[in-house]
Length: 305
Image 1 (cartoon, helix red, strand yellow):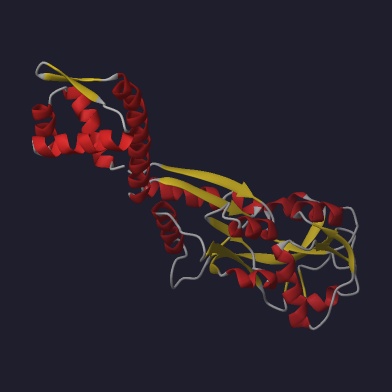
Image 2 (cartoon, rainbow, N blue to C red):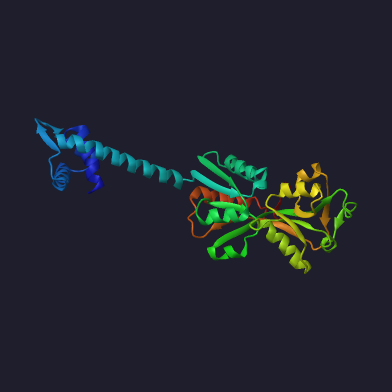
């Protein structure tokens, strides 16, 4: 069934006159008559009947009108929606590590909206661990995610990562710990003490593993925990020591913060997308905005949580 024939049918219904309807449609009257005849032939019922100089609907035409109008309304709405998205409007679905939701992501999103007031953009924000976010990206639940280093088991999924920020990693110990009188420490000096470690699936665990690989040693792990705030709370209560990203929360807890003298290391934060997922114009525009915030030639943005 030709969509033009549906539009011709609806125009003829409203105009009730072949010549006038043809003029409005920009076609000849014989072309309009032929189109309506083809439509009636395909449906197997008459849609119109003559009433003097005017044309009126048959009972079949009355029934078909509602279907035709609803179908074209749905189609036109879909076309408008796609054109709306093509102009850069639409939805941006972001997934990110929970600590990035305090300042980093809100600042990026607000700055992007401020730079593009002409666009109708809506964000969906979701948080989770790096593995949770990567699974969601692969399942196409997110357009972009902001995570730590991608674990090796995800390399098969054709993901693209761009470093956009970094965090300083620090060692935290209880206030009554033998290392508590220090301001900095070499990581090798911490090996005699039990560690509270990030659980498997936490992206930062890979960063900390890399630190110890550089050192050529392995720590003694007493507990494994997912959340950095929980780890900090356990350290404050003498359950062990830990390596965590620096965050202002640490200043309010009963822990001593030690900078890591060696090996030198910074935890990178990546913007990750999937090569198997089409990025809408609005997402591409946001991605470009984030690239520009990396201060090319000046280094990545430092995050202080």
